[in-house]
Amino acid sequence: MITIKPIEEADVLSLLNRDRFDGPLEGYIMTDGNEYLGYCLFVRQDAVTRVLDAEAQENMMLDGLVRAAVAKGENEGASAFSINREIPALGDWAAAFVPGQSEPIENSRIFGNCG
Image (cartoon, rainbow, N blue to C red; front, side, top):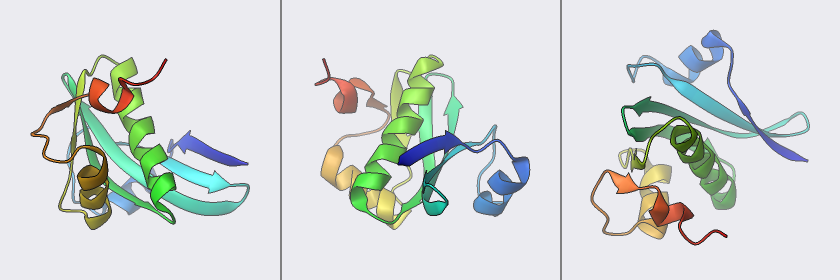
């Protein structure tokens, strides 16, 4: 069963961050049982969730990680998100799911068709 869980260990966040990003960094890790599938790092700043880095074995897994990060930010009051397009996988995600959108992007752009 594939699960997405918050990264609660500061050492793991630090290892994935590699001193690249500042702020109250949060992250998710995706696994299937004991098999590692990917991660996502993000920070919520005011009303914007900033997805800083992500990596996953498959595009659909990356999509799940990005959406989980944006949803967490939304649950904490963020109404928009931004994507670090300098990370190739995130640039590809943005080109597929929010092409031509200037940032910050309203959360409803990726969640608006639910329900």
